Image (cartoon, rainbow, N blue to C red; front, side, top):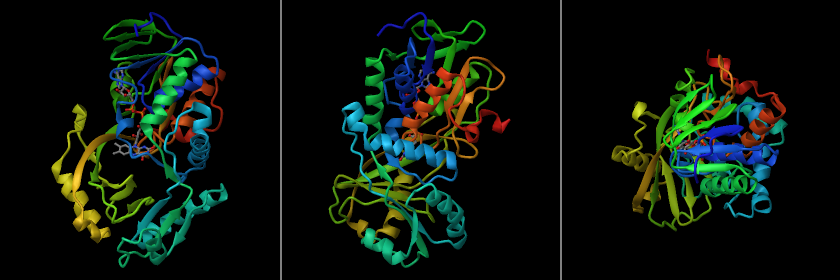
Length: 370
Ligand SMILES: Cc1cc2nc3c(=O)[nH]c(=O)nc-3n(C[C@H](O)[C@H](O)[C@H](O)COP(=O)(O)OP(=O)(O)OC[C@H]3O[C@@H](n4cnc5c(N)ncnc54)[C@H](O)[C@@H]3O)c2cc1C
């Protein structure tokens, strides 16, 4: 697809966030939407996500966003004609520390008030859900049966396909190399394109793209690994997405394999290196065997690493970039950008088309780190 010379909105990045925005803009009748992707649709950090979907957030805004997204995932096939493998496998958090448990209480109260089924259960009840687990060191667990999982690639490609059907243009293999906000020219590896509005949806590379217009955004990519075992039917699926809060390790079943993350948070600097670190595999194995001793008999078959675009308070950054005109931020989605992409797309599209945020989005205010 050749690069158009002009557009009404340019979106930098065709991950879950950028394609979700493009789809909703096109759906709202926004003409001449152009998405610029340096690689391929969904090839960024969206392709590294574990696919987890939860309503357990700490703010009312994010819980409402989750509830909207869960409705979209439940009816995804009707809307997009694509099976995204959505399943309510639940989220289970294993607690060893009293202060950690106390920290959950106000959040659970808020979540329950908004209609989310989240409960504190006993270690023995947790063991009924995942019988292979050792629970003697736990004081409690937090269980939310309505949480689940789906395929990030399926969701992102469905957004992209439908956006294209509605008239949006998605150009792959084109890198944005500079932005001149005075002339609204976006420079790329394939020439220039003008746009009155430019949306930064560049995921872990968001700060790099923002620097092109002299704006600092507090998005700090941090590497995290996920490993997978050879088929291991000794732990029958489905298992919930289970997080050992003490060690940060989490696991869930993927067909017959077990996915295991050590829960690592590593600053890899500006080169954004996502090469696999063998030490992290050993760390994942050690933490996993502590919780699931039967895994002594399993073998790790492979793994990958990806970058989570973290912000200092772990809330995304959504809104007009401070101090400049025409540059919108939809960045810093931390470890929940895939699952929040359906509602993010709608909210950003409504904001851009109607000229104001459709609900109170101040928790995402780009000015809050100034
Ligand atoms: C190990 C791991 C597990 C995770 N698990 C989950 C999970 O269970 N649930 C969940 O919701 N989230 C999860 N996440 C987080 C999730 O992956 C991200 O929050 C989300 O994918 C961010 O989407 P995005 O569209 O903003 O970024 P991306 O998918 O990275 O998309 C941005 C795109 O911009 C492109 N781009 C960047 N710079 C330029 C440029 N200059 N020119 C052109 N294109 C450019 C990139 O190539 C990329 O394709 C996980 C992340 C990791 C690493």
